[in-house]
Structure formats: C-alpha cells, structure tokens
Amino acid sequence: MSKILIRGAQVLGGAPQDVLIDGEVIEAVGSGLSAEGAEVVEAAGKVLLPGLVDLHTHLREPGREDSETVLTGTRAAASGGYTAVFAMANTFPVADTAGVVEQVYRLGKESGYCDVQPIGAVTVGLEGRKLAELGAMHESAAGVTVFSDDGKCVDDAVIMRRALEYVKAFGGVIAQHAQEPRLTEGAQMNEGVVSAELGLGGWPAVAEESIIARDVLLAEHVGSRVHICHLSTAGSVEIVRWAKSRGIDVTAEVTPHHLLLTDELVRSYNPVYKVNPPLRTERDVLALREALADGTIDIVATDHAPHPHEDKDCEWAAAAMGMVGLETALSVVQHTMVETGLLDWAGVADRMSFTPARIGGLAGHGRPVSAGEPANLTLVDSAYRGEVDPAGFASRSRNTPYEGRELPGRVTHTFLRGRATVVDGKLA
Ligand SMILES: [Zn+2]
Image (cartoon, rainbow, N blue to C red; front, side, top):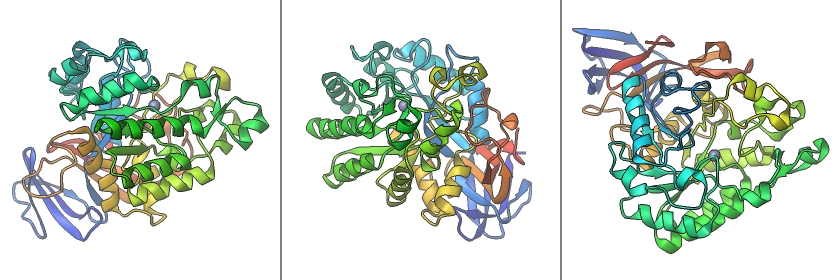
C-alpha cells in the first residue's frame, strides 16, 4: 500500500488537518480527505512537523563503531523524529577526503532510516595546519557544502580566512567549533563559581567568545559565510546579535543540553555531564533560550556524541566529553521552549527543520507540509510525559544526562519520503 492518510493532525501545531501521502510525496493537505485505498494513521491531538534535520551529529563510523555506526545512529535519529542528519568529520580516518565522505554518504543511503549528509573536515587530519581537499569533497558524490573541524577549533586565523574564501566560490559554509585552545588547556568544566569550589580547571566563556568575535569579522572581511557550532554563553549571543545587526552572514546553533542543564550538575562528578563546550550557568541558559526564540540563534543542533560505557564510566578527569542527544532533543526543546511559551510549534519546525536544511543546503528536507512536497514528516504526541530510559535507545551508546528525568513529548511516527521509519514509537 503506497497511500497513507495521517488523520486529524495539528500541522505545525495549528488546526487539525488530514495529510495524504502518496508514494514519496504529500498528495494533499486538507480536512475530510478520503481514506480510500490508504493506510490510516489516527493523529488526533498530535502535532505534525516536517522531518527534523540535525546539522551536528557524530555517527562515529568509520573508526569508532563500538560507540555508534551509521546504521545505529540513523536509527536513533529516526526515533527522535529526524529525517536527515549532518555527520561530523572527526572520524577515524578523518573525513578530510572525497573517499571518506563518499563512504559515509553511501552507508547513510544503505541505512534507509535517515538521510546522512557528510560534513568535510576543514583541515587535513583536523590538525589545523593545512586545508583539506574542500573542492574535491564538494565535487564528490557526497556533495559536501558544510565543513568543520568540530571537536577542534580552526584556531589559526590565516587558515580560517583561507577556508572561508575557498568555500565562498561554491556557496559552502565553515561550521566553527569556537574554542581558543590556549585558553582551555587542561579545562574540565565551565570557569566560574562552581569550578573554583570544586578545584577543577576552568573553561572560560572568553575562550568561545573571542573566536566567535574573530570569525564573524573574518567572514565580513572576505564576504563569506560562517556558522557557529553549539553556542553556549550569554556573551556569545551578544556577539552574534551584533554581527547580524551589521549584516554579517553568520548563523548559530544551540544544543538541547545547553538550553536546560547548568554547571551546578558537575558537583555530582558524574561524567555524563562532561561535555564540550561545558555546561554553563543559569544566566547563560536563559540567554540562549531567549536568543533561540528571537532568532539570534538560528537552530537547535544535537551535537549527538555517543561514547562507549568505558569512556564515560570513570573519574571525571579521564572521561570523554559529549552526550547522546538525537532521541531526546525534541522533548528537551518542548520542555524548555514550547512549555515556557518562548516558541510555538511553527517555531520548532523552523529551528529544527526548515532553517538547518537551509543552512546546510539540503534539498528535499526542511520543506513545508503541503501538497507536492517530499513526505518527510514527524508526528509527535506532545501530551505524553515519561521518564527517559536509555535502555530503550536505538543508539549504541547510553551516555544521556537525562536518565530518569521526566520529559514531555514522544515521537510516534517518522516518515522518510513516505516510508514509515517509526510506527507507534517503535522503529519500523
Ligand atoms: Zn564541537
């Protein structure tokens, strides 16, 4: 059966409507659509969103398949309502050649759960010294347009300038992990009251803010486009707001965890809260929420960073940095942005689908829920409340900071080009 009727869904949180899918596309949106010959999904009371798009996912393949593979990562993505993810380049080998990005792209195609768009490294081996083959990666079958050394900062201003100039020719973008390395040597958590009390090496806000300030000025100087990964401080928000007011072509993302969690959690010494950039203060959290609401921060990106048990279940100083996020992102956004009245569901569709697809230049995703568009859709039971149980994750890793925490909302169905990847909350 190729036809599916999603009946009575609140499209982008609006009035109930029916959505008829025929094959890979949306055939019609309206009320009282005929269910003849169609499989019916009853969606009364549920919110229908365009399939979510994550501009910042670590899939770990090739090289760290013990923490995640393209297959397990795309299954996690589908579970979280995503139909496309951008896979970061810090794999082993690094995705700094056409060969590696094509491998990741091909594995994504084979998975069938979620489209995978590889991100290419900016510099060879993420070493920050020599530009990678940006043009070859762009011209490869993977068609890379987003480049990032994420995990590491492109800290050399000349290399950053050259990268911005290079991608300008084909409309690409550099996604910067903003972290001045000299200011964060040995850093273990946010620099502030809590780090002073705990005696842990501090990670000052200025390490992030100084790089963002430099890079928006570089982008302006060469007339290119820069994207700021996982913005985490109130000061970073001010710089991006200033840059946008000046007409600089900058976009920025925030992670779900930076919208909710603070450095107070580090008092537990539980490495599940160890992340890069670190959890900041309540003041930062509130500034990030406000910036996401007013559009200063363009999108939510997960920075899904799976790690095997042994890399997280150890003392704080030795633990790896990062958290899984694909399967909880929408719930955290509902909790922090929708239920606080800062963003409506149309706003969520913008920040988690339309705009990330646009920044990444991804055709076929982040499209309106209307006739003739690809049927990439996510159906959400927003009334659901439940405790996060990592045992139920599709990800190969379990390093979530939300275990046992009650969060709202549950993805009941995800459709990738008309094919259900999630049905009744379970992977199809
Ligand atoms: Zn990063």
